[in-house]
Image 1 (cartoon, one colour):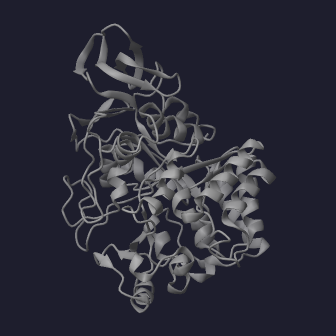
Image 2 (cartoon, rainbow, N blue to C red):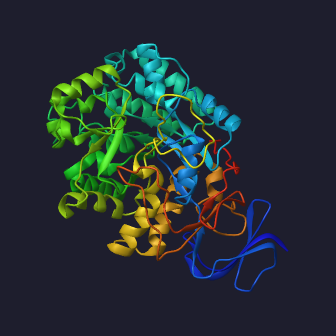
Image 3 (cartoon, rainbow, N blue to C red):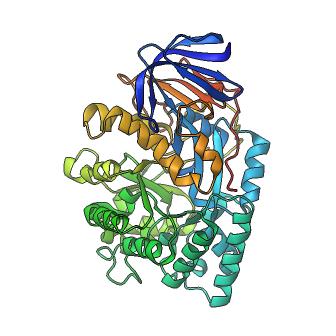
Length: 488
């Protein structure tokens, strides 16, 4: 007799290759049996005709709060990790999440950018993404550091790794003056600790002929010279129309024995602080952008011209902005995104942004979210959109392969740093009961650039540690079963 039985669904376990009708028995927060014969449970849920798979693992989520976690749960996510920007000091981030509670599992890398801002620009060490964005345009942290300051930065990162950070997040693309030798030192530190780095790459040489080192070459060079596991964040957004050259480079160094993993998200627009160095009006042409390519989230519209862009960057450099890079209605332009997603062993990762509240009181536990709350649609729809677009509409991935890209692939990227991830991304006896159940015929995103917080459809049930966070398509607003994922 199990606590819960999911009966008669199409069970997909990407590690064993199982793809068949089975019955899943869950007790004590873990999967206990995946059997051909019917099982008995205190609660039995008939999931005939639905897919039962491991909960989706999101490697790249800046949406580390309760509202964002709820939106991601409704998109099938059971574990959301902040690995690209990271958090510094990492213990502050874990302590805050534990005190507030989370609907899904959470974890953090240590933040090279925040540690660098602390050392070079005096930014407070508060493990807060909003605080990081406040300082994102400060030229003091964007420049080359002295050897002594580099040693201080590395020391802070090493302390965070000892405290359980899941690797090192490196926003080197936001600090274009950084000496490439410092990046190599960060990679060497990660290699010594056996953890990945998660990099937002510098500009490619095609975008900036004067860049100190080509962004893609820098990542693969570090993998070869240090032996570190180098994870290439949102390769679609930093590579743009040069994605084929970058993918070929990654494929070559993999054949040579380097560990370089990639991720992508299924949208043509990114989002970041409007004060980011690469959004300066005079630099937009490098990416084929203009000021009207930038959409200011709070203003609810696109930037009119270069003068307005300079003004809003100066007034509030941390304000979030859409960066419309690839026209989603243009098959050629959007093909860049599709090829990055279909690349061998690329993980699906959202780059989610925490829902932004207007000025005034903020009720983090309110549900449904008020209509004025906004974010990037990928926060609510990345995984539903991937299953709709890549599987049903384009046929670029089979359903089992798409599930693997959302579950096992990201879990394996992190599991050497965090042994707990070896119990996620799989649906086998002994694994954590982080489970997503969806309708393959109807699963889809519903969030748009103008209605940004509409939950995905077709996600029927989501369990975290054996507890329903989503049941029959509805969120349980009282469910906060998320647990920390730590390095160790």
